[in-house]
Length: 299
Image (cartoon, rainbow, N blue to C red):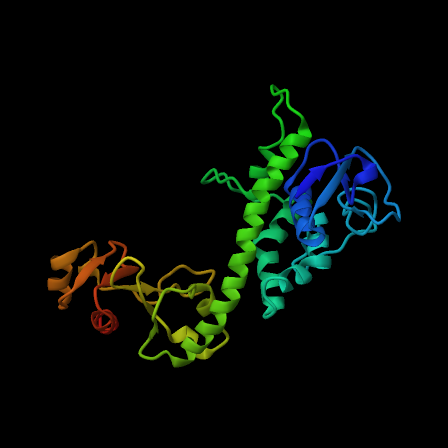
C-alpha cells in the first residue's frame, strides 16, 4: 500500500508538486522494501536521522540533485534517485521472488527500465519523434494535473504509482523469466545442429542467442518451436542485436503463400503460411518444419 501522510506518520519522504517517473518508480520500489509506504511529500527539507527514507529530496544518499551525488554507470549515465534506490535494494527485492541468477536479473531490470528513467530525469532525452512514441517517463508525466484541471496533485501521484506498480511487477516477472529461459537456451545452443535450434515449446530465445558467447550461436540461422496456435513456427534470426539483416531468408518463391499453395510450392504436405517478408513461416508438423529449413539452406 502507498499512502500520502503527514510528516509525523511517514516512513518515506520525497518532493511535492510535479512528479516524474523517477520519484514515482522510487516510491513503488520502496513498497517492495517497506511493505506499506507512508509518503510525506514536501516542497523542501533536509534529510534527518529519523528512520525515514528520503529520496529525490533532502540532500542524502538517495537524492541525486546535490553536487556530491554524481555516481555514473559505465556508459556515463548518471544515477537518479530510482537508480540509487535500485542499487541499494534491488538485489534484496529480487531474492524475495527468485534466489538464482541475481546479477543477471538485476542488470536486466536496470537496462530495460531503471537506466532509461535515470537518464531522462538527468536531462538525457531520446528522439522518439519519428514514430511519436511515448516513453515510460512521458506516460507517468501524463498523470500530473493539467492546467485546466482542479484536482489534488497527491491523488494523481497515487494513480501514477498504481500504473508504475503494474509495470514494475511485470518487468520483474519478465526478468526472472528471462533468467530461467537463458539457462535452457544455453543448453539448446550447445545441442543445435544444421543451422537450426529446435524447442519443444516457445520460450524467449532471440536475445539469448544473439548475446551468447558460445561460438555455435552464430551458426544458428533458424529457430523451430511448437506454436501456441497450431503447428510449428520457423523463425529466422538477425545477424546481431545491432544488425537486423537476416542471417538467412526463407525462399523468395514462398513469400506470402498460405495453406495448400505454400505446401505445393515448398514441397511439403502441411504448410500453413509463409510471411511475405520471408522471416517466418509455419507448418503443422515438426518434420515439415525441419524440411523447410533444409530447403531454405539449400537456396
